Length: 139
Image 1 (spheres, helix red, strand yellow):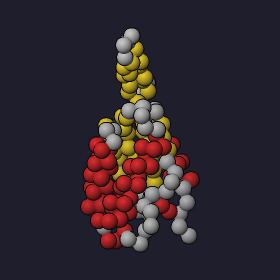
Image 2 (spheres, one colour; image 1 turned 180 degrees about the horizontal axis):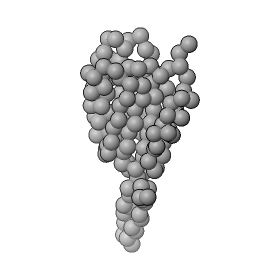
Image 3 (cartoon, one colour; image 1 turned 180 degrees about the vertical axis):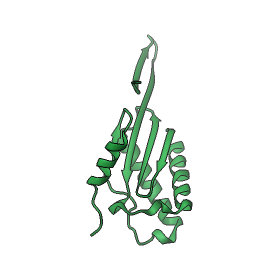
């Protein structure tokens, strides 16, 4: 099993330099588990928006999986951002832009729940399924 969390420090007398390799796996679900990513245009645009936000934040995307009611992202990021800050920024940016661009989503106030799962090792499909099943559905 490959260890995916590496933080090396190299300190010089005159200045401090840090090498890092922080890899995070995130999964987050749509609000009330709505199946909003069934339309390929919405799915494709969501991927583009996430890539755009990650580029702005200087985050390297290693993998994006968009299913009907959830998204899984594997990223490499600097230690200057906390995992919570990164995923909140990505979800907020994605939600705002999708709501702006697609009129069929206007009835939804927020696309995503506040909840997410994060791991520095790989997320198994079982872990993702358990997380999704714990989220609320609309009554």
